[in-house]
Amino acid sequence: MGSEMMEIPDDLAFLEVLGATPEPSEYDADVWQVNVQTENSEPLTLTFDIGARSVRLTRGAVGEFDVEVYREQVGRLLLYSRGGERGIVVEVDVPSFKCDLVVAIFPRFRLVDPMLYIGN
Image (cartoon, rainbow, N blue to C red; front, side):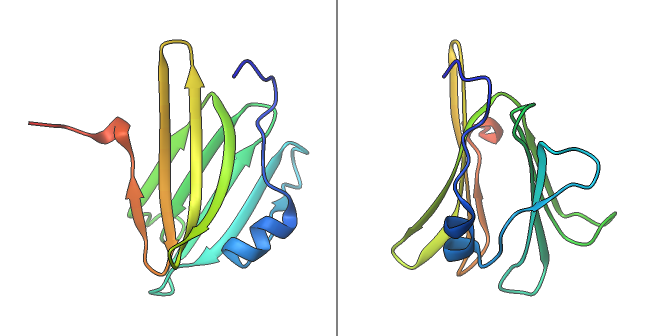
């Protein structure tokens, strides 16, 4: 990738796919947060820092997360809508390592993270 800034979708894409737009942090102009509800009305928060190229995803109430994933060296944050499923893709692309974290949010939560693969 080699980009100094992470690529992100525009507000309209966030609204169309997640039903919410990013809100800026009051403390850092590069940090943005999107809050949505999963199918079970669980809070899901996507926080991204454009300058630091990092993404954090949490599901659950503050202090009671059942899912918390953090990525650095993010090249792009993508949104997708296909086959009735909507969600995000976090692309990490550094020398000798490429990984796409895929998070389906609607119609039900599903996380696919190759970094967590244990294998046989």
